[in-house]
Length: 204
Image (cartoon, rainbow, N blue to C red; front, side, top):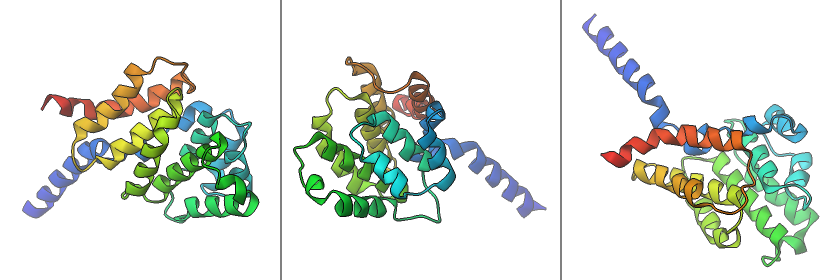
């Protein structure tokens, strides 16, 4: 009985702290604000990359927040670990010359999506996508979606170091972004509501 009681105490502790120990990348399910989009619904169904989604993510006519919502809906899945690789294989097959043009805005969007998909492949190791997004960041000074996703990846990268930094990263974008916001209000609320869990660690 003594050991059984200890087990339940430990289980209760784990459950009570789960929200704090979770992932900024996978727990900020802002796709819920975009469920009216057909491609978001489709992404929720297949939870992977196929030609249909890859074509959508590389389209110049699709807004970046819509692309981000699709990737957010795909999220992570234990069955699929090569979403980023599959996406880039499509890019190199269909548009190899375009993909090599790093001066092109569409190309930068492709690498933005690639980095975000890498996070969904393995959110325990986001160093490479973190570095990619940090390099891309300067090209998106007026893009709230790009800045916020970059902040979330940065929060994930710093998760084992300082939880206050996790909050500061997203707070900086939310409070200091003075340009037009290209992400739906409900999506922003999902992100900020979850990331508030880390705010209290800034007072410790």
